[in-house]
Length: 146
Image (tube, rainbow, N blue to C red):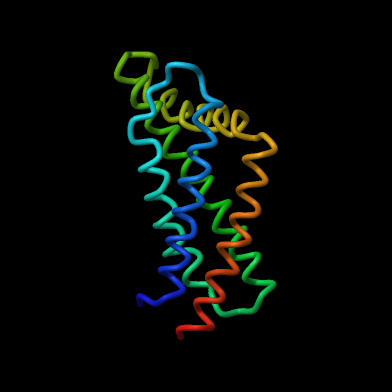
């Protein structure tokens, strides 16, 4: 059921994904083609905010903070998984893998490499503060427009 808390959660995580995507780009290898990187991450933020965070609104401020942090962690997980899957597919088209199981394992290896790359102070702090603010905004929207 669409409501204001789902919309605010989706927009908040999408905005957080947009900001963090811009912070990640300078950390990656030089000459990397990002293509739809930011757009995909924003879409993931929209989906996770709507499905995960919007459904859990209305349980108090402590749960709002936890809701925001949970939504942020789920968003980062799915973004790493999808971006890793895209990179694996790109490499698979160049015959870099001997079989399908090796290619599937590469998704997690690439995602882990990306996670290590983005695990720097300013990105982690942006994610934590943004997640908390998104949770609080979602709770406020739930209380304001039930």
